[in-house]
Length: 141
Image (cartoon, rainbow, N blue to C red):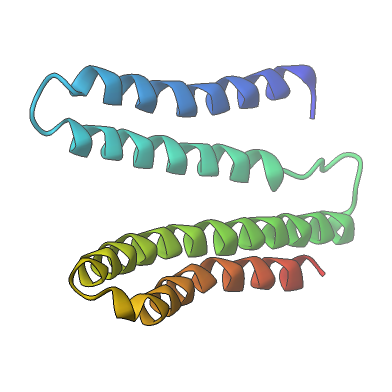
């Protein structure tokens, strides 16, 4: 990858972090700001994925044959699959822990004797992230 491409990737990654955060800070003043921040985060996340996909799977036709290009493409797909399995499982675990922990705290405020049961449900929700991490390790070999 030449220097210009590296600068472009770094610029895109910085913009994908700075612009949604700035949008969230600016949108605190008006109603519906969370939806706008979420939409910009999703837009920039998938934009970064598309750019990384283009740069990661771009083969150098002059330097390598079809076999090497196919192997490089397969290697890129492995990394993409590992990243998606870890990322999506962590998002799912965060959603599950948010609902399970709030319900557990509500139940704990009424009866303190059920702390063990509540802790098990929160731990089960958190194990989703660990399963995604294990799948990533098995994909990468």
